[in-house]
Length: 144
Image 1 (tube, rainbow, N blue to C red):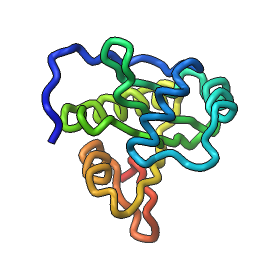
Image 2: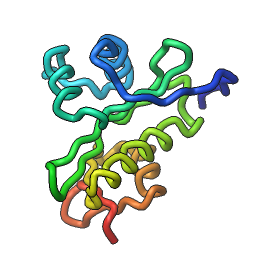
Image 3: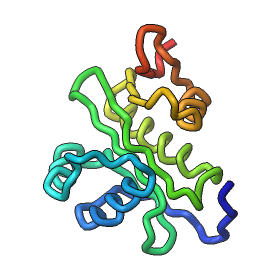
Image 4: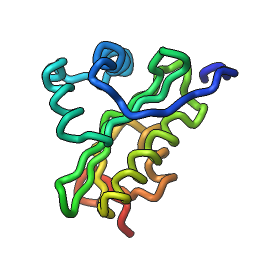
């Protein structure tokens, strides 16, 4: 369990210059893929402007979440990561809510998540926010 921090956690849109900090966080939380690089990240920022967020204390990025949509129907939330020492402080919950609210403002109501089936903390978090596990696969959405 992480210790409580008294500094205010600020949430904002991710920027291209955040790449190294986000990559380090994804590495630390084992969410980085071999394909993730600065060029890809910059493309994600440009193509999904306004849909990638970070949480920070001072200038240190302690959490991130990526989201995107297909332009019409489907939204996606992925790469939700919080530094281990800042977990259990609702950082992930606030990041997920930011992403969901942004998608809903864009007219996207069907939101998908890809979660490893042994990632029980993430599964519990997403279920607490109204997402359900589909019986046929480990694809979660917020539709009842």
